[in-house]
Image 1 (tube, helix red, strand yellow):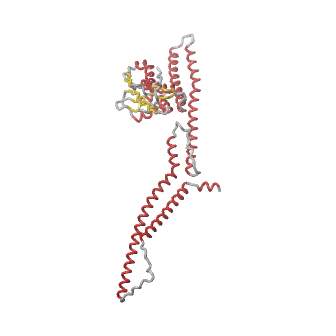
Image 2 (image 1 turned 180 degrees about the vertical axis):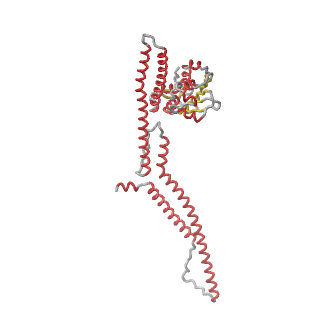
Image 3 (image 1 turned 90 degrees about the vertical axis):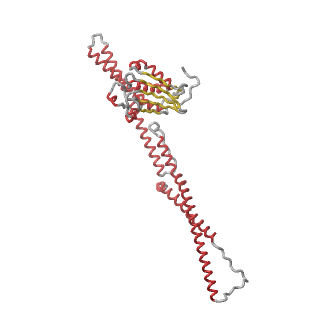
Length: 395
């Protein structure tokens, strides 16, 4: 019995009842208005007062003429009443039509409001906030079942994402031990007192280079996994311009080795401040600067700029070079994506740099924007929530 009652309370039944009652009331209102208009237009006949002398027709012809005149008057009266009834019906139909449309819109909007709330909440949920749920309230109908099904799907997706991130983090951490053992074995082999063959030294150097590459790759995996779990809570107010300048200053030797020219276009009042984890934001900007240096051409240039617009602090790093395809540029924020000829390189990075930048920016409520410059080269822009500069600006 309870199951039957639960199945009976459906959206279709609610729509049927609501619209049936609405049109029933509309029909009743139409009849009431029509009858009021018809009665209002009818002429009232008065009875002949008692004692009034009856007028006898003088002749049969006069009586016939009188009867014909009365029939004509009756026909005119009926025609006038029909016209008034028709006009009243049209007016009533128009009024009730408008009222029905308004009532239908209001009722439909009220009934469909839970669906709009579910749609809005579902659009808001992404891979970064799978912990949120719709938690729809209301009767146990199709709308509630839909919301509960979406919540169950989100729960399964959250579990899958969490398991994937744990696997990446655990695997990256566990692989560090054998890598350290391999590196130590190479050092021990080369540190023996007897002369080491040149081929062995060359092989050891090659293995060290590959081990360093694998170590950078594992470090990138760990950073990406930690960032996708959310930024740490220890936030501080930082200047994007100062972090970028420090990153460039730390790579002066690399910039000089490629003959690059760096151009600074920082905001005059150093107003591009944001709040976040210092370690992650520093790593984010270091990755962008490293990418600008590594994938630049000999004798190229790097342009660094910061801007604000009242709610957002932006850092942009531009480089020159050949004209790039925007479709390929859009994929650079995904792991292991490189441009054109760079896809076959193994020594120019792990392919995780910009994906880590995108993850760190998203964890701080920001975004990464990659644009191919029409003149050639790449523009990397990071947008983060603007924060007020601290009262005491650190040196």
